[in-house]
Structures are given as C-alpha cells and as structure tokens.
Amino acid sequence: MTVLYLLADPFQYFPDWTAAALGSVPVGLLFYSFSSQSWQTWAKIAAGTAIGISLGTYF
Image (cartoon, rainbow, N blue to C red):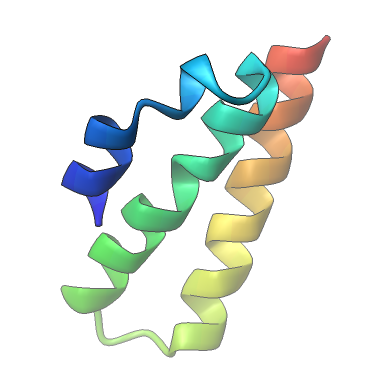
C-alpha cells in the first residue's frame, strides 16, 4: 500500500496538507502488521498522526 501511495503521487491531485495526511494510513497499516497491538490502537495512532500532519502542513 505504501508503494501504491508513492506511485499514485497524491501531491499532484490533492492539496499538500491532504496528501501528507493520507500518508499516515499506509504507515499505520505497516506498523500494525508488525505489532501485537489491536487494529483499533493503530487506527487511533494513524488518525492522530494524520490530524497532526495535516494541521502542521496547513498552518
């Protein structure tokens, strides 16, 4: 999924803050596959990271 994200190059289709926030989803799924944490925990981490990145890029 990370490779598809890079091949799709969302930075040319979306604003920078949206494309940067979308990048946290494949990273969260990658970490989930190597972790013993539940998927809900990694979903919260990915969502929090997406919000933080989008706010940091937007402002």
